[in-house]
Image 1 (cartoon, rainbow, N blue to C red):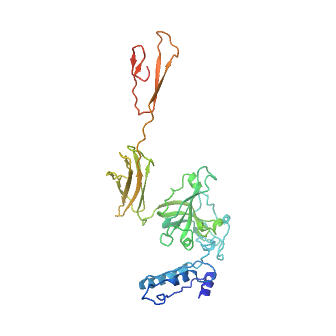
Image 2 (cartoon, one colour):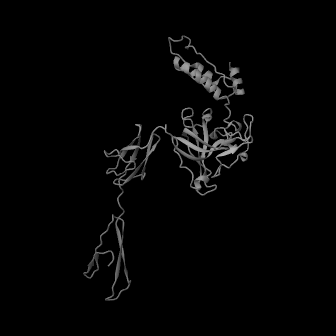
Image 3 (tube, rainbow, N blue to C red):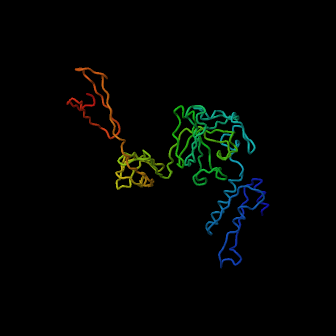
Length: 380
């Protein structure tokens, strides 16, 4: 059997599906503690290394349903060493090509940097194919800023993968999860031109639009899903209607003091708007607006809880701790003054100007001129 598994991996055959029926063990069977020794055998059997899918049912019902899944997975992931190639995409511009074909990106009918790409192209046989694609209900993977400042100062490409939230949770860059993903980028030229969409949040479930592009430089890169295909540029996105409701919030300043006004900002993701908000600041006070301000009288660590409800009954909460520091004492009060002219004569008007710093403003002033006269303004 191990030789057969090795041959199937080498030939990238659709399958096979093997049912490994394990008796209860160890030697005395069910009367004593059982084991799963055959599981490690299933993970490593065969000659050489290649990906394989192991399904371990937990009961009789799972055995029935997992059998269907096993055959579906075997057919779907029959090419474990690469992702979708050029000939297997939605835009067969080069006609029929063998598996693994990767043509030069220069053959693509438009540049991925174009701010006015065509919405369709005509291939050699006269067929008109769309280039603008729309995908619903995908999860946003980790975001990264690339090629920053290479063309425009302070402007970057924003790169991320979009994935099937069930088959490829969190968009990992490992096979077979890469088979359920697509690479996407918000282009720096669109950002510099003021026409790019905002950057989505990592983990959000969105509907996405963009133009298909073939990038031959990354067909062997895991982060690019072992495929040259990407959605570049991304032109628009929105939160998916079936996106789960999520809550997060920020506050500023990040290290507040007692009696200092703190701004809280709620960030709902997914669900169905409009939203309602409920804040608990940890000191017995609450708020029901999206972006409240609050101050604390005492120095302590407070747990702030934000609860968001959407218009269809969804609810979710987020909590963070905020450390309130004692307001530092003001610097020492100091004062000085100047006078003009610097060497006055009798009966000459002298102008006095005071300077004060430190302490706590506003200040009050009291002048004594040494000849019995006094004054109170800043200048006299």
